[in-house]
Length: 412
Ligand code: 3MF
Ligand code: MG
Ligand code: MG
Image 1 (tube, rainbow, N blue to C red):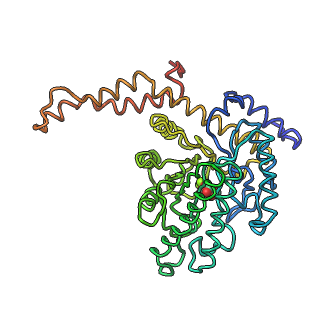
Image 2 (image 1 turned 135 degrees about the vertical axis):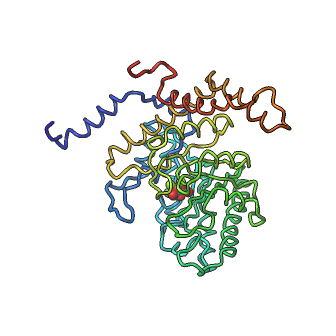
């Protein structure tokens, strides 16, 4: 093949994306509670070892492009859209009203707002630093984000305390730092109650998001489970307002089974919000789009969430790879990821209604007949053949994943 001229490359990418088929219409995509973050699409590909590869884009472009693709919801960090020095000034109000107008123009809603507490130099020692003035600033930032959330009609507010910890051991007192972090969260909830009352709106759902490492070296609330314990400790003043925003990859990063983490959150009634993406176990936070690494696991995650009627947002917290261009973000990255999510969601429905899986799981739950619970050998004998159904269920899930349950065959 000859080299592809630069002016033919976008055409080629578009043609091959189309040739893949299987894309849903924007009307179908809008039926799902999928939320698109400002920071995901505007991420320029920069990191510790990397210079940016994409040019900056504004919220106007992100909102317009998300809407064309068929996303109904957008979310943002405060400083993704309002420069840090413009916060708390008339410039903030002006930007917020421009966001409102842009959302309305493109028939999109703001689902969630989050305060950036990890990037700016003010967070060098984290949001619960020793300096009372910095902690005062943290409270102002969080309550300001809550106010912006209400102004934009959001239902959720997320907190990712990725700088809550230390690099130098012994330099901070962990218990004190956690108390200070709770103080800021409590201030945000108090402010929320007040603003909600004035505006006649429900209070926001405040969602804590754990990540086991990166960017802080040691993190004080590294897992969703540690956050559940924190929420039910006496430190949190309004525990009923606070829940979780687990992220699929953040659970994998510490070697957990995301499905088990989600199950624990569901059982606690705290699965408020869910960041969806993919990646590798025990590695850094690569934020690859859903289904490109662990499609079988993702299918099972969605079976769990469908079975337990999770109805919160699915937030596309991914990072388009550095090989994807600005054009590719909206023509390949976002639509294909949304479509894989929808396909996996629908396949989860196939799993739930599959007669083979149903009969196999019902049989396992019925157990082997004729055992004597007082006789260990009879228990083993009674269930021995039945337990092969575990592996059969695994095979059936694989068949559903590749479409074999609908007759797809190879060299039969
Ligand atoms: C970092 C994250 C964050 C959070 C975001 C929302 C940049 O690994 O996942 O995304 O999701 O700060 O609070
Ligand atoms: Mg996240
Ligand atoms: Mg992540």
